[in-house]
Image (cartoon, rainbow, N blue to C red; front, side, top):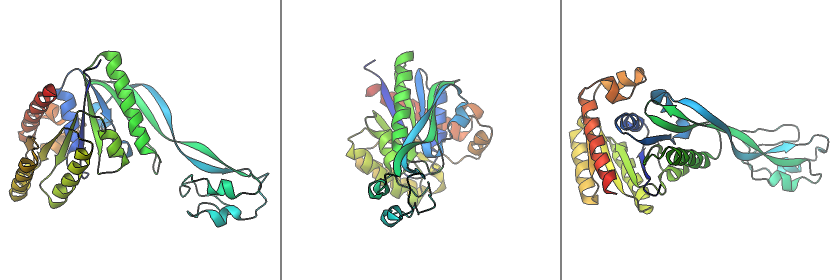
Length: 290
């Protein structure tokens, strides 16, 4: 299916309303696959309630494993480890970076690197369409690779079910997980807020999106909490040629919807819900033009 489109919703910082937006878009859109690529803090499944049909272990970085029968306690591993992860009689898995220096330094071949399971991926079906998601264990490594795996699973679901759209809940910030969620998507939607940190982080994220030469658009959430900053966002987006897909007002019913574990647009028809519906309509129009 060559006309498959992928839309990634991201935010420069956490707490701007990114997942709330994704959940509403998933409820409003049709013929799509949902992918939760915010693997370090996966929570979209709490609103989508998928019935998982397949799952698998995700193997991340390698860690050192010692064969005590071969170890002579010479201390070469401890002297060469830059991360203080290993001593002659102890090993700290969380501190190990899997660099392999201890393996090279060991004169008796008592150390080796072995991969470890750091998370689980899932695919399944929700009331809003097929879904792929994952959960990374605390301090788990290789989260960027896990994002790529979730996207691959989502693409498989799209092709298997002949669905033309994937809606991706991307991670906040600028790290490798965000890069993995953004690359080769057709549209990046940045959800921001009119706070100084929200503006600053949105501008940095747009730089990242421009680096990959992606189509971009903006949603301003809680736009009425600081109208001066909202005007700044409008002017900045106009200068950069970025369409503003929606301006969502602050609405206490958003929290009520999250507490009820429902997408906002299904929980109520308040001001934020109505604005979110309008934002989805503009997003769908923009997707159709790509």
